[in-house]
Structure formats: structure tokens, C-alpha cells
Length: 307
Image 1 (spheres, helix red, strand yellow):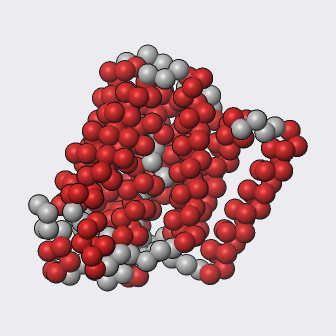
Image 2 (cartoon, helix red, strand yellow):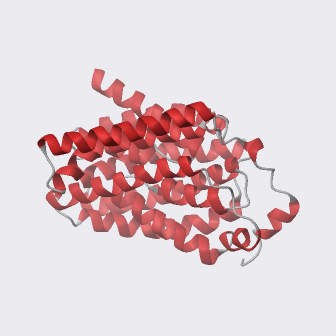
């Protein structure tokens, strides 16, 4: 029972991060399950099934607070679902020995991407770039890649899609986060179906899934309300560091590094992470809705292009 309570708390914490930053629930939860010894395909399946509840409540909460642009949701959801189905089938076909290092490498890349997103703090796109990123020709492939990565990595929809749109889209951060979160429900449904077809329910700990889902569902409305209000750079760097800490050992072992060499590399990574975190705290950088003007009528018309 104590373990399930801790998992539920971890699910709530992951959802607070995901709902407010637009990323983090899947990669954080999957990293935790891998660290507990869960097989990669089962870890990803468990996270996606748990997200059926969290993404539904999160999307509805974001819609309630006016954070969702439905044109963006439509353009992301369908290709995202297709990518998730393909990714679930791919991961289900791999052996545990082959899947574990692959998933660990992917999660490390996503963790580094999350840190880079908040360290670089790129400004939103404008002009032709903003118009292009609002079209199906851009959003479709982005959703496809995000869905595939989400299924194979147990998470990754947010780091791939949210990070890209926050740095290129004319929408304010809270509407990017809300729209991507709403589209994620379709992605998790498709990924869950793919895993259930490929794996069945055998091996999936429904108590663990229930605990993750319960914690996330409780936290989802609060996270939607906090979207864009929390100190995003500090929180994002913390989440990226946690993901790296949970998966770096597997990647270093894959590279043939162990003993003193692995300790040195881990020490260097830890020092670099602490330096970046300290820098973010000192500078007091935040990603708030007020940092970017609300979308005007003209901006909304941009989203009609390419329909």
C-alpha cells in the first residue's frame, strides 16, 4: 500500500509538471517504472493507459480555462494517433534486452531536450515561420513524430510537440500547452490500443496504473490553472535532470563505461545540471502568459490558412 501511495504521489507530481509545462508526465513516469525494473514495453503501456484518465481531465481543464485552440488540436491529434499506433507496435515487437537500452537512450535525449528548451529560452516565431507552423503541412508531421516517440519512449509527446510550438508558434504559451494537452488524449488512446493488441493485459500491474492515474487526475485541474504561471525554467531543468538521473546509468553501461569512468561522467553531468539550475534560479526567468501577447483576431486567422 505504501508503494502505491508513493506511485500516486509521483503521478500527481508528474501531472503538475506536465499540465503546467506541457511536458513531463510520460517521460518522468516511464523513467520511474524502468528504474523499478518494469519491462520497457510494459512501462510504456502502463504510462499510456494511466494517461487515458489524466489527459482527458487535463484537456477538459485546459478547455475550461480557455487554453485550447481546437484548430491546432485537430491538426495534431489524428497524425499523432497514427504515430502512437505505429510506435506501440514497434516497441511491442522488440525483446526486453533490445528495448531497454533503446528506451533509455530515447529518454536521455528527451531529458536533454527539455533542459535545452528552458536553458535556451528561444523567443516565439513570427512572420512566415509563424504562418508555416500553423499549417497542416507542418503540424501533421510534427504530430506523427511526437506520437511515435511518445509510444516508444513511454512519453515524449510534450518534449517533441510543445517545445517545438512554444518556440515557433504565434500562440501564447498557455494556449500551446492547452492545445497539445488536449490532442494528447487521442495519442494516448491510440497508443493504449496498440499496446493492448500487441501485449494484452498480461504483465500490466493494474494497481500501479490505477495509482498513477489517480494521482494525475487529482492534479490535472490544478496544473491547468497553473499553466504558464510557475517558474518554467527552474521546473523544466529539474524535470530534465530527474529523467537523466534515472536513465543515465543504462546509457553509460551501453557505451561500455563503468566503475570510475561512469562515476566521473555522472559527476560532470551533475555539476553541469547544478550550474544550469543555479543560473535559472538567479536569473529568475519565467515563462508566463503575460510574456507574450494574447492572440489577436488576425493571429487566429493565421490558423485558418491551409484548412
